Amino acid sequence: MFMWRRVLVRIDFIGAVVLTVFAPLVLFFRAMFKGTLDQWMVLIDYWRSSSLLMVTVYLLIGERRVAFICGIAARLLIAWTMLRSPSTQDVLFERWRWLVSSYCVIGAVLNIPLFRCVMQRHWSPLCRAYMEPPKEFGSLMHPTVPYTKLGRVGDIGLVSFLVGALLLGVRWLLRHRRGNP
Image (cartoon, rainbow, N blue to C red; front, side, top):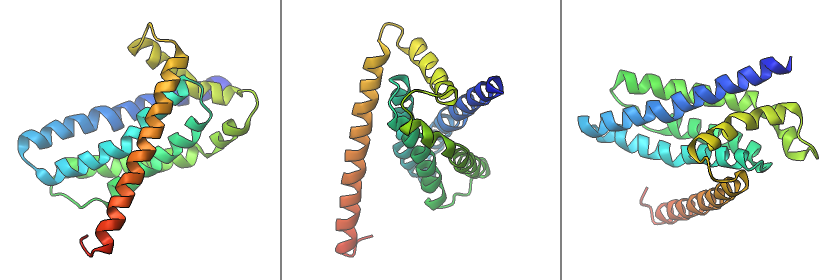
């Protein structure tokens, strides 16, 4: 049974890379060269929200318990960002937007059992299975850097993300108080 979980986790990691990194990069450059400002702006919002997913990878490399909460939060934030953004006329873009939103919501729901990993004293096989693909990524991208340092990068990324989100929230509140949406 555990082997199937490891395979599913690996498939999820690969799916996340394809749907949340490669596809939006292609769409971003396509929108940039095509001159479609509306798609470009949606993708900028997307990259802001999806940066929490990359932070999650580095937190998992460093075996930080908060990574399991961040992963679910990142998926929900991506879906919320995509679903609240204005519709475009591009069929390919809209299909990706709905696909990534659905993938993120379903993934967040399926990852709810991972909340147990936050409270466990010792890592369960399921928690360890979720750390394997990010650690392989860390070994591939940063072969000479210890996992503990990559975990610190994740810590810094999380703090930076939270400060950025707080500043955006304050800016939004100030704009809406003045009546400028």
